[in-house]
Image 1: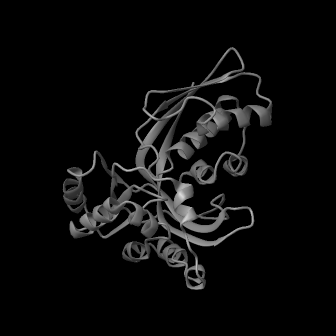
Image 2: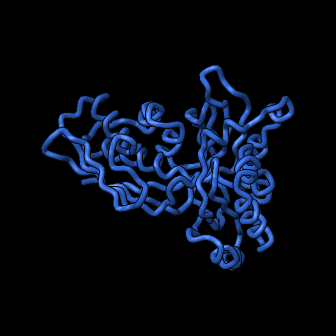
Length: 284
């Protein structure tokens, strides 16, 4: 039996550059991890089945689950003769823009690598993980990175400066394909990449510059669909956040704070309007 933590991810930046011929958008994203984790347990079975167990509403236990898909891919690729039981202990909100499903899939692959003594490197796992989902290669490393392509190409960066993070998910649903469908990219947007400034700030350890470089091409679209996202972000900034941004395609918004009391003020300010609010640390 192997245990793996599956940390949530947040976007420091999400620059959508152009729509590709394969239907995906070319993106450049700076992402990092936070201390909000699912816990994944993987155990060998006597038969060859893959079984997922999760006690959390709206999370499938069948082939729609990314952890299930990751385990099947590992079995097929490396001809593993035994099946596995995967138990997901969920803490990361579902359909939130925090990469919970991708983190679970990545943790499953790392766990199976150890359980069956495959001795694969993280780079090898990350390459295979492209077949499961765009965010899974990043989640294999669970550090700080710039991700390009449709998110599957990962280049690791330095760890960002220490900070507190308040994460809040409003009670609305977001369809990622619908958000991308509404994305209209003009020439100015295609040239304007905030990721470069953020990468420079991380490499130099400049916390203030990281906060000022926070950017998400999808944020305005999701906010137009759901004004509660904008209200939440403004509430965080008015409560003393050093920076705030919607993560992924939303609806979750996070804020950065240098000091714990500052983060606590933000947490208290948004706790009344959201059921799912967390005060955690940056990992990266």
